[in-house]
Length: 76
Image 1 (cartoon, rainbow, N blue to C red):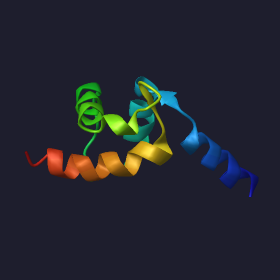
Image 2: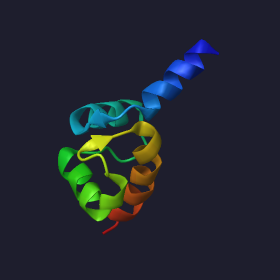
Image 3: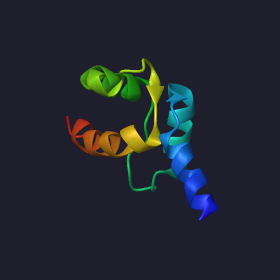
Image 4: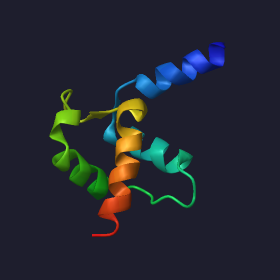
């Protein structure tokens, strides 16, 4: 139970773009597209309302939306 709480806190923590990028690419399944700084900045520009705290990211808030967006963005 303690481990789940720690993971939840980690996923909700606001982190800078480089830390989010490293965590995202490390934990994403191999069949999913990898992210880059340029891709994350494009995502951030597309969805500015998700970034009310500036350039801070959270796994909990941004990961799923990024995965969904990347599947469409990759096809463009």
